[in-house]
Length: 86
Image (cartoon, rainbow, N blue to C red):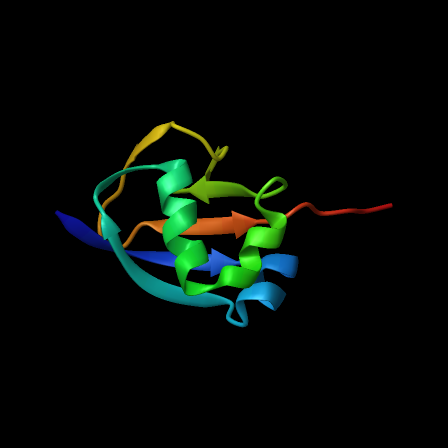
């Protein structure tokens, strides 16, 4: 069963994707890595930051891996690249 989630792109991920937000359809039960792969299918340039990116799903951090996620329509998934500061 699929659901519609809102993907929010920040900083470098927005530059690479060319969008700041979009709604995508993904399986309701998916691992964080599979979710990333679905996003990269749409925006292949994001593959450049795969080793540095983290997600926030419903405002909770999730690392890319085999961690299972249960998504619901309307959930927000933030793509957060590395952020430097001084």
